[in-house]
Image (tube, rainbow, N blue to C red; front, top):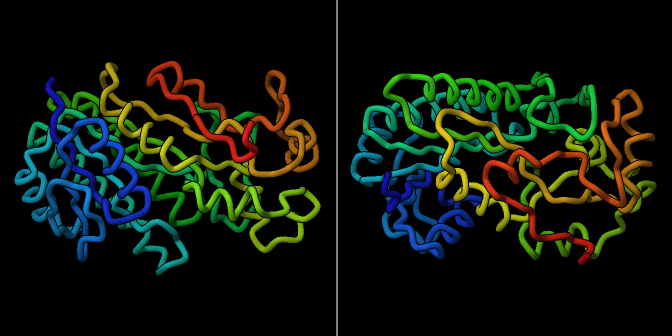
Length: 295
């Protein structure tokens, strides 16, 4: 099918602005569908929309004349409000967008899941791992409202993709914290990333739960575009992350000390990521391009 116009929900956010810029750079007409005032100047169109209102979602997507949708418009963190609000944002906005795409004939949809779907990130308990590196076949164990919402939206996306008249291609991207150049410099390059120092940091539990993973913002935007352009049909989940960890410690040592109960499959070398992105490479042609170490 012809792919000319892409609607991006949540285009006001950091990831949304990066996706809009990337799509524009690749020749697409774009429409930002967001709640609140416009906070970018890249998109060709803007539709102010409450994504929890099915009628507004249908109306905005119809008016945008989109061929594809990137759905990012959700509560980005669980600590910004009550758990039920976070869960509703993740799940119901995704349901409205996906079902509207089905009935409006939008053939390609990519939705933002999260590393939290694994049961990581914001949960107060340690992440439960069977093996490392994690891939799309690893069991998921979501418990907190944010993680549960992300996992349910994945299942919703898969279910709507199975409908006879559902979108042709539906993808869910699981990704860790996304960083631009400035954030990488301040958080990683110019900071002490030794394991001993990180153990004393307030964010150590969260970093450990997310396997010390990150993704470069432009690489993430590239992955969303590739999901829309991919030639598979139906539903697929993809992990995307940088090829290295955020900690200045060899990955074999990191796995042995912090995830001793997880079976290491294959061999780990250097500062290799504990997230396996080979499926994205195989099916999308996606490769992470940036390393904070400059290697």
